[in-house]
Length: 61
Image (tube, rainbow, N blue to C red; front, side, top):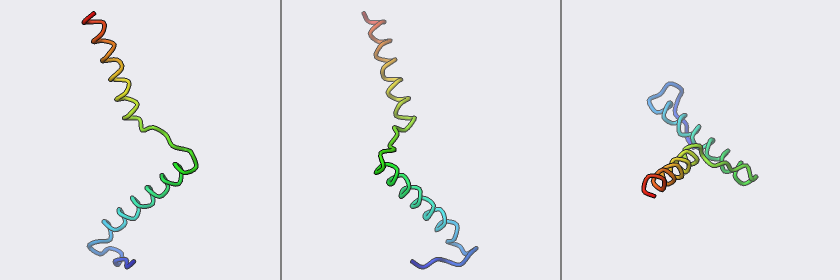
């Protein structure tokens, strides 16, 4: 893979893309080792759904 010169017009974008690829690779490796964790936003959404369902049940019952 060719890399642009430091300070060139595409260097910052290319650096961002490479860091992103490395983060994805690291996450895949963690998941393969069994270190998978549920994202916080998923847990918050599940909690909000449960509280909303409970509140609806209390109000309508």
